Amino acid sequence: MSDDILQRDHRSIRGTISYTSKKPERMDEIRGREYFHVDVHSDGKRTITAHCEIDDRPSVMRDITYSIDEDWYPLDCFVRLSVDDKFMGSGWFRFGPDFAECETNSLLDGRVSQRMETQGRLKTFQNHAIACDSWHMRLFDLEKPATEVQSIDEMLLSSPDHRGATGPMLFRIGFGVEYVGEETIEVGAGRFEALHFRFVSSPGLPEAHPPYDIWCTNDGDFTFLRGDIGGYMQTYYELTELTCDN
Image (cartoon, rainbow, N blue to C red; front, side, top):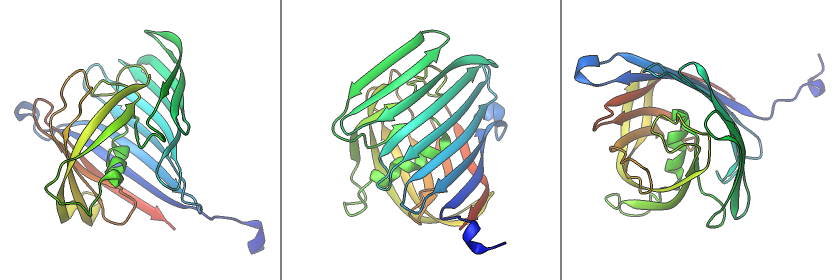
């Protein structure tokens, strides 16, 4: 077949993340999983699709498709959510130069249209896929002192619930992050040079989130490697499989 018939200008990153409990009575029990696929296009734009499952009752199943531009600013996102093995809601989000909007349909609220003004381009969006948690870390300025907590005043969520089990609907919070340092870590998917960050605050959430340690690849892709949440949640996330196609 002639080479001019085929075209593949993007590269792909695919992986699996395990969700594990660290509560004493459930130590190392698998409580969920996530499968994700990222396409990085030749112009720098990225799209991730992720299928997320939480087995803890009431179970949560979420499918997302999320796109960002070459500067990592959110473009659009689709979220479909099931809780207790029943449809909870679905929604489409779009992000403009100074606004965010969504069209959703949910079991609790019916059809909803939302629009929020933002502080210029929205810097980051949380759709509750664990693979996207590490993408927020690209906002941290590594040129500043490592011990300094850096605050992001505006992040929008698809749900204020810690499991992302409501909505979907726009919700505004801020968050604070500190940089722990560069580390070499081993997870199920292999050995990686990693950046270690820690979420230390999330003003605006209805319930305070415990500190959340995140490790991601130190290669510009911010691929999620490991996550450890303490406090009353006591959950652990680990990349167990990874495939990269260039």
